[in-house]
Each structure stands twice: as C-alpha cells, then as structure tokens.
Length: 388
Image 1 (cartoon, helix red, strand yellow):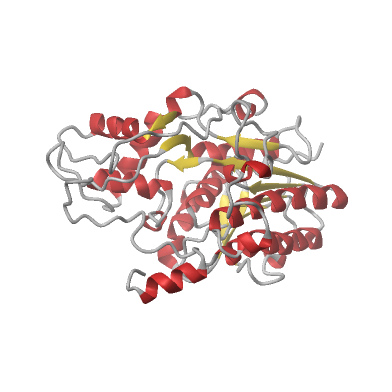
Image 2 (cartoon, helix red, strand yellow):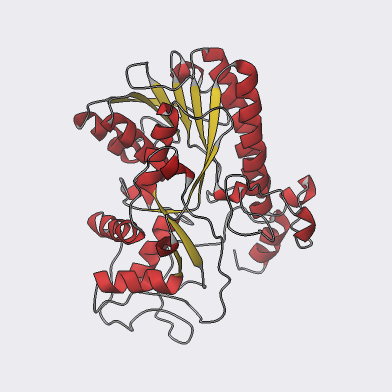
C-alpha cells in the first residue's frame, strides 16, 4: 500500500489559506509534516499570516507558494518531490464575478490541471480530494446516505430545471457544483489508477468550528451563518448536519496514512449521530445556553421543515479511528472564535433578534448581497430592477 507518513517527504495543501485548508495545514504540521501551503497570493499577509504562525508551533513546518488553480502548471513547482497532495481549493460560487459555469469549470477543469501537475511530479503516492456532500445527496434516498450514494442517482426524480445537463449548469449553481464534484471525483480516481498512485474523496456536509483567521468569516460559509445567529439575524428554516472542521482535517491526514484503504474510496464527513442532525432551532438553543440573555437568532419564520440530509459518520470512525468532536463543542468553538476575532457583536435581551414581524435593521454577513453564481439572465434582470 502507498500510505504515507511525515518521514516520507513533503506534502502540499491547495486552498491552504481557507477555512478547511488552513485546518488541514495545522493538523499536518502538528503531526510533523513538511507542508507546502498553496495559496492565491503568498504575499497577502492578512490572508496568510495564520499559516506562517504555524511554523512557531511545529513540530512540522510550512512554506507558502503562490498557485492560481485556474492557470495550467500553477502547481508544478510546489508539487515537486511531494508524496501527498491535499486538494482543498475550489470555486464555490461565492466570490464576486462568479457564475454557475465558473463553478463547474473551477471544479473539473482546475482538477484536471491539478492532476497534470501531480503526474508531472512523479513522486506523489496519495491524493486526498476535498469533494462535498453535494456529490452524495440525491433525490428520494432509500434510507440514510452512505459513501455508496452519488448525487447523479435518481435523475428522473429531479424537478424540471434541476436535471443534470450542460444547459442546466449554465443557469443553476447547485447543479453545477454537484456535477463538477461528482465528475471530478470520478476523474481523479480513474487518473490515479492509470498513473499508479491512490486518490480518495472527502465529502463534508455543514462544516463549522473555530476560525483560524479573520478572513475565514466569508459569505455563504456555515461558520459565518453561526455568526449571524449570534448577532441576532434570523435565517430561513434549515436542517443542519454538523461536522467539525478539525475532524475534516484530521480525517484527511488519517486517510493518507491509513494502510487499509485503496484508490477510489470515499469518506462522508457528517454528523457523528443524531445529536448533530438538528434543526436550526436547536442550534439556536445551544447558543442560548452559552450566552444567556443575549438575542440569539433562530428561524426567520416558523413552519414545516424537511429532515435532511440524513447521514452519519461511520467509515471515518470504523476504518480510520477518528474521534470526532461533539456538535455542542463545534458550535461553541465556532462562536468563541468569532468573538475572539471581534467579528460579531451580540445584542442584549433573549427575544431581541430579527425575524418576521421584528425587523431590527440587522444586515446579514452570511448573505450580504445577491449570490454571485446565479443564473446570469436572472442577475441581469434583478440588477435592472435595482435588486442586485
């Protein structure tokens, strides 16, 4: 088996400055790895200082490398001599100028270029690819989702406008994201098999936990939605499937080091048990216990809520020996880190939070403006109406 360890050689992490990527780097450094952190701009100090700081903790080390994943060969130099690659970089659709098609291309085409750099290096034994639970969930599941579930199952159950095709991709970000993750996963497994190394997929659901930098408070990221709740901004009803960002990072290292897995295996990073499969009102209740007397937000409007996605953490525990954090710990550490970075301000009064019929003028940091990667025709129409 081609499993790796810290003495085998350097490893590289793409998307290293981001929420998940930074935690992967931290975990690897704590376990003695020489890590090459691939970021958009290594000279951007506010966005990378938290990575440089990890050198002080050790016992491993971090070096920063500027790599634009949209440019062919961007990873060639950083990957030279690496035995492991942890690919966490992705086009999510939440950045200015994004479109559904950019989300799709930022997944598949960027992954194809990543694989070219890996094959050119010739030293890589293992690739751990951060996919998404979007590549798992599909319509009409027969029981809980597992690693055998793929998002392109039951296409006939999808509503009009959501069936998978390139025409739909041009207009629908959710389809574009799920399609690119499914296709990218299958691509890396096939390419790794042909090239003689091993690739694995990690499919996280609602990832929260401690922020390692101020820049980790980003629009449409789940850790930021926790911040909105702390500030009293009520959101539409949601059923959470909570996984801790530290568990996502730990699982990736354990996958790379595991002697009992093989190319093409997938790992759902989801709630450990029913305690992490909870409606938003229960997330609110946990936060209210932490901060009594504060205006912690819940549902913007009450009503029926579909229970899903339902999936529980099994393979990471039974095969890898992962010891996950509790959802209460994840929620608490997410909240405390936001306060430590002075990214949120709470309101006095338990009922003092914004919801239907109680408009307090609070602005959302999770959804501060029109989502970038929406149907370009819809965007044009909304902007013409002054709603952009």
